[in-house]
Image 1 (cartoon, rainbow, N blue to C red):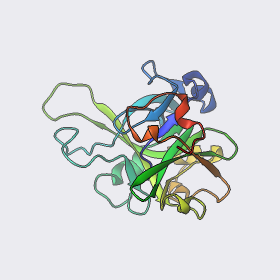
Image 2: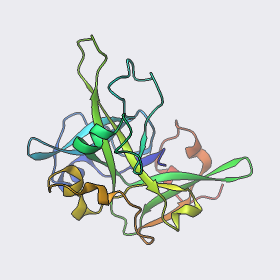
Image 3: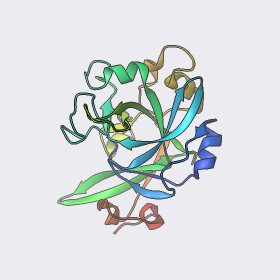
Image 4: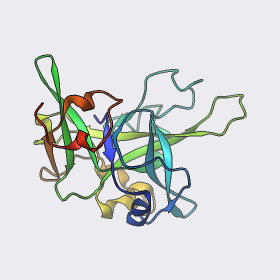
Length: 223
């Protein structure tokens, strides 16, 4: 599961890091509380080059008549992504990377939800495996909306202490294969990260609100 994340890397640095051509309408950064339906920074491979572009976090199947016509699909399970009607075409032809600095998960202490902030052990940006799709209401002359979902898998052993699912994390050398630049075989990348890939710390319960903002959200806290 991945239901909230942060991104602090400047857009020009992301474009350079992923060797991608940036769009002009990328979401504002830093953002310490990226929520479902927000715009996200997404890397794709189209027309022979990588592109850094905004997408709506929340995949909309082509048969939805309106964005809220069914469940909000922010995640796609690696175990079933190739078979689900909503995702199978995108899994084959429209794979992407969603860029993050860290993500949040929650544990419970009785009725209290305790948030944790999770980052790479080496402090590098996170590259979430994702799928995407253009969507537009049928019969209306409107520009398509680019929508995306994060691919998730069963958590590795350390991460399972916090949550039983985790995003599929791509290493730099695997991004070309996932995006479709380097032939077939991307399915083998849909696995849990190594046990030593991530670290985490408790953060303020302020982030339990999707309206919370600011860098204090990712600072260690035991409130």
